[in-house]
Image (tube, rainbow, N blue to C red; front, side, top):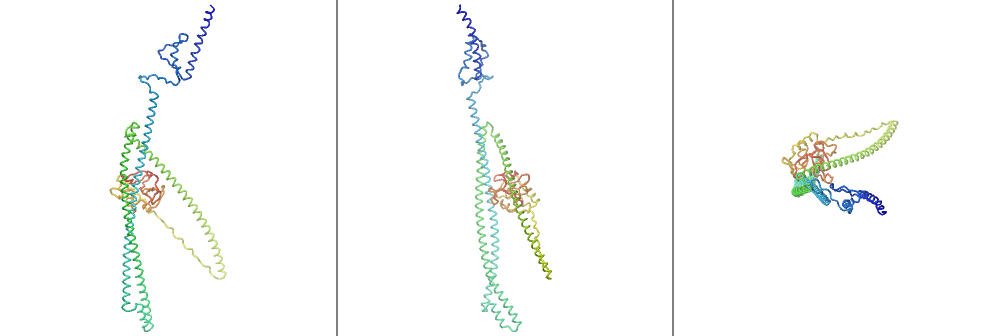
Length: 504
């Protein structure tokens, strides 16, 4: 009876303990990140001795190791969610495609750079040929002038030689020189008047003889010098002709190489565009348009950088010139002050000397300072109307093909276009970009006006100028760009910062 009573007292305690650890265990599982989510059809969990068997299966997944993955519920369409492995593989594939696309774009950029460099090499070779042609023309002109001078010198030598031969013949016939014969006549003269006349004859004969001999000597020397100069100029013309032949062969080789490069890079670019489209799961046409847009953006950025650099360089040059001018002005002012001091001192000394002369009865002397030469006025070798005529001619040739050595009408190279354009503007230029700069007046970027010439040099030296264009205004130029291209209107910064600006 006592045992039964005790058992009845302990039963509520056991039930209370069982009811107490279930919420505690649920709380622990929630904190550890495990959520009990029994199926909707499961019976509600009851607390008590009867509920313990039903609670065990529900708690079994929660009591499993923490690293064991749990299955996600199925999607509404019944398909399973991607597994962690599927996600990792998708991410790796995306990264691989992105890396491949980046590598292909780098190869496309390298191909564009290679194409630009090939075009620049071809342009340099063409201008080298034009320079060789210009030097040959000058050498041939010099050789022709030297030949004319040599012929004239030889003619003068022959005439002097004939006079000398006549003198020798006269000496042979008379047995004495004309000068000695005149002396004999002088000794035989009767009376002072006849003697005076004979003395004049003696002097004239002596002068004539000396002149004949001097002429014979000097003209022979001049003829020999002229002949040597003509031979040297002829040899220089031959060397210039050889240089033209070499420059022509080099230009032709560079043009052939440029054409091959263009064809190879076109094939390579098309293949790379196909690979890029596959890597991005797009089309070749979409990738081509995207690359064109990227190139346009990159070109605009490069032009802005080039313009900023050119403006900064011009500003630095202007500051340097201003500082040098200020130093020159200060030095000139110092010299002028010293000159004024010296002049004042000289004037005071002169006044004192004049006063002393007046006191002694003399008159002061006068000294006149020579008048300064009139200032020389220099006008520009080209007029604004000439520039407009050059621009109009160049605009009318837009779209014509680049033709190396070309001066029209079917095609032009860069310096051929500027030469013929400025020929319409009344200015004669050589078909060679470096010579065109030397034949023009340098200006700055801010001084540019339509018709001025813009030059590029790969070394920054005027002797290495290889390209020229005609300025239109608003940072636009017209140029014959490169072999294989056509005369076009483009930005003045399209080839980077120009090296020089000049006005014909």
